[in-house]
Image (cartoon, rainbow, N blue to C red; front, side, top):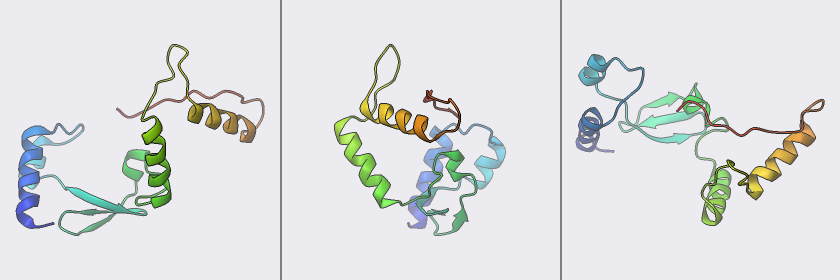
Length: 120
């Protein structure tokens, strides 16, 4: 990505994005690191610099970046149903299938799953 585009993205970020747990003075002075893509256990910024993604992008990319087979499966699911909560007796086949599989493979009498999100 060219330097002018990176500068523009940094300016827009500083003006419009709130970053939790960030030293704002340092953020404004140094500018954000703009991540452009990921490959396996690494991410690459807009300047082409590669970083080891030691936190799995805050623990939600545990199987690595750029996994085409996972993107294909996700795209197929999202074409059918992008999201549906499990509140108020709503359910959907992917949640039911995964919960049943987890019940089969977990030890002891663990037979039910609570699907939850974290970190937001």
